[in-house]
Amino acid sequence: SLEEELENVKRLKNVLLARKGGDNGNYISAAAEEYVRELNVVAGKLLEGKADVDLAGRMLNEAEFITREEEGYFYARKDAREEHRAAVYSNLAYLAKLNGCDDDAVMFLLEAAMLEGVPKPSTNVSLALLLLEMGRHDAAISSAQHAVTTLQQQRAAGTITQQSLNV
Image 1 (tube, helix red, strand yellow):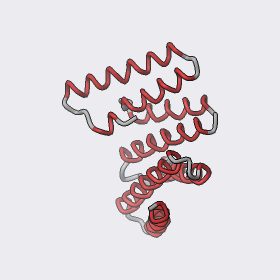
Image 2 (tube, helix red, strand yellow):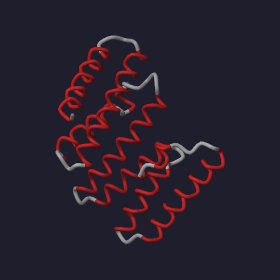
Image 3 (cartoon, helix red, strand yellow):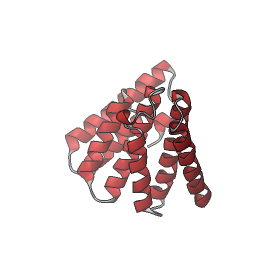
Image 4 (spheres, one colour):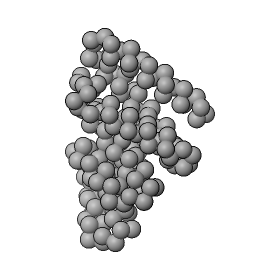
């Protein structure tokens, strides 16, 4: 249930804070990764159902803070930091879209794509749909073409994952 997931988020935050008091980077990074993952998942569910958009925003802001490089929570796992930060930005884009801030949503999706290195097709498709709604047709077509190209490359390499296909 949502209540159990929110309790789990609180528990994970306490674990992270307890580990931050120590000095073992691997334990801190693992706790940060688990906490940010759960923040993203629960915030995503809150946004999907539009159950509590304000709480989702606070959770995403917390996840964004934790994934800042200068905060040092992920210093033992930089690759994980960027992956989770990209997911945070994708969710922030959805939040911005719900709040009618399409330009901010585009900015968040572009940031997510940059962090992904090779942007996930789902990021490009989300960006294409948003740009299409905004009347920016040429940019929308370009973004959609990037999604198709990436999927074709992944198919040729045999690396298509379910995560690649999620929009």
